[in-house]
Length: 404
Image (tube, one colour):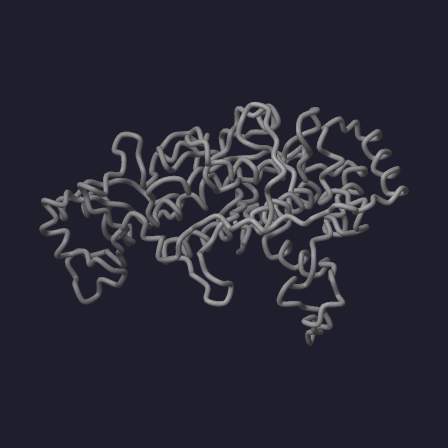
């Protein structure tokens, strides 16, 4: 039965069984690491480690039958002979009963389908654009009713557009009905989250956060250029606080999962997308492979299995944005990097009303409630289900109010 609480967008406390441990940091320079799937009714990870002369590094995230082992490069020996350096079944090797599959974990192996931040798009020249007077008055009434004092709210056209009317997320109507994301947690998997930011710290959810780069519980970025994750979070959950702007689901909680800013392998990625899925409701991933949109770099075996595990077992079965810095704001965030967090925020609003919605429910609602845009362009076509489709815009933009 599909879980009723776990979602991942296109996206375990203490992780005592994580593939990465605080005690033994990952050292690919001196050790080879292997992901191994086991039939636990036949063999235990400890017995496999003993047989291979390997160190048992732990379970890989929430994949209970997938485990991580390491062997010193100078002593690969029996492990190297038994474990192949590529994915594949062990049926023809038969070196250990109960071993079903293995894969060597190469640092940066995901660079074959590199996980990168999507590039920004050029900013439009809005010189000469004129705000609609009636829309400005409506926005003012909304601010007054909700007590919005955030200085950048009037510039957040994606929340309420006073120039290109209706070309926004149509979210303020939901806010006025009290739908603000309360009771939901969105996890952003990226290069870190500056949880010290005054705009974000109130809604920061530490229990759902982790730093896979440094194997610590605090996902704060360590380099001045690591701002992408914080900016994505700044679209989802900054509250009404008089700082910068608002998030789509400004009463929701936000987790940060730091993954992209260091040397990782596929087991880290698999663990990250399942991390604390008992608490994190939505996973937002504004990154992907450096393809052209036609030749798509796919996910590896471990990641696919983690995604399947998440939707099956997760969630207890049941633009203008913030920048790194205590009180910094930024206006330079766009493209798909900005789009994914906005959709995550819209989903948080829907879940705050109906937490029992499944990933499949959300998928259908996004499809059914999509609003076509720029219909004058000639690539729109009608599908057999009588739903317009465009290769540029899909089925259209997300309508948050209709989604809720």
